[in-house]
Amino acid sequence: MTPRAGMLIAAGALVAGTVTVLPAAPADAGEPAPRPVPTLAWTGCATEAYPKLQCATLRVPLNHDDPAGRTVTLALTRIPHTAKTFQGPLLVNPGGPGGSGRGMAGYVAASLPAKVAAEYDVIGFDPRGVGKSEPALDCRPGHFAPVRPDSVPGDAAAERLAIERAQAFASACGKKYADVLPYIDTVSTARDMDVIRRALGAQKINYLGYSYGTYLGAVYARLHPDRVRRMALDSVVNPHGVWYEDNIAQDYAFDTRHKDFMAWVARQDSVYKLGADPAAVEAAWYRMRDALRAKPAGGKVGPGELEDTYLPGGYYNGYWPRLAKAFSAYVNDANAVPLTEAYERYGEADAAADNGYSVYTSVQCRDAAWPRDWNVWRKDNWDVHAKAPFSTWNNAWYNAPCAFWPVDSLTPPDVSNDEVPPVLILQATDDAATPYEGGVALHRLMRGSSLVVEEGGGNHGVTLGGNACMDEHLSTYLATGEVPRAEGDAEVDGACAALPEPEPEPATRTAPTAAESAGGALHGFLGHVR
Image (tube, rainbow, N blue to C red; front, top):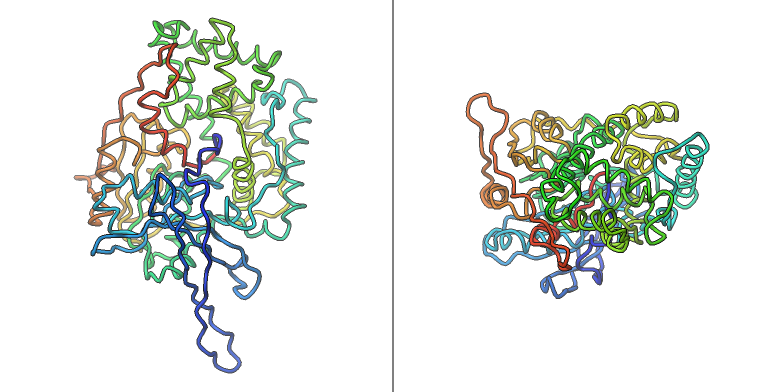
């Protein structure tokens, strides 16, 4: 599930450099010429936030099994190391699939302890199809333009309309990108990462991946365990559920997290005046949803857009105060303006979101098999909706193009690994986007890995977002390679307390809350799994 992508790139005006290629050595007669080793030409593309930022581009094979064939271009960024001790490149990925990673290099370098960051070249990149990489996919511009039909189909006609909309998106992708779609997938992106490694002149890479980036990292480690030096995976995709089952698991987890938000609002009844009983607050939220079906707020926030607006609160509780304020204003004061503003801030799709969704569907629909019989989707989603109504059908329609995808699906790789060096896995117990079971599953699959848990935490992305304890585990690992180890048979190797809940936002406050400012920067970058 992916909230709006408008904040994904802090360094929005990056100017890419070029790539040069070293000549290949002559080949023996009758043998194919070896693949040239690319090198990167970095150029300055400083921003106010990241004055040392550099940019480059890199051409990689569209089809890695045909290295002499057509190429596509990746856009890269770098914050170069400054210390005498150099620990190599640290590739970073914010997830998605479809999240732009160019802005992550500056953020990670600025968020790590200065001494640790100084020892790495921090490398961000837009994966194939994303952002400034070329071609950048945009299958059906304006696909999420408001007001969409209610995500919960009220009758057969409404369901048919939604199915046709999903079919239209899949068809548009097939018509515009028929020659590209067979190569927009996780394994191809992982193979791109190895071209990046070669272009950087590194024998091994270090890697920090969030959300979908954890799965990308696990796939890379499976392909090239000997080329991994250190790998930190934050908020872990369950590799056993790629991708249909993982989305079903998310539906339950997001509903639970939404109930956590409703309970928080109830505890703040003196501020928001929506009632002190969580069940009553939740009932008021669903009444608001019903009212928006008849009269969308500001002419643009119907039931689907409301879900889009409140879904980011499932990723990050720093958004709760502003979301609660909009909820309160609508219910208590019949004032729809704050709700419309919240939608524009958290839920509205822009051009970056159109691109991100196009890559999201292209990767997930290609990566693994999805039911091609809509009757399976209908039964499964009504069954889940009965227990977890918050976003089940919204998520179903988000993924529905995979039922009609114009390219056959692949078989997901086995990511179990007995060869990779110790991997650091970081996971919150109440994460909705990548539920806790995913971290445990990958920990069991990767021999020698270490699992560090944020106890009671519900935010997605638990490092470099304000939790000093989790950050210390990450920093120590990147600095020394050391991971914590459990005593005895315990599965968890390290634990940290969750951050305190956010403080309520008074009705007169317009600036972001402290919690929103502290962790919102990270969550602006994360292109979350949907």
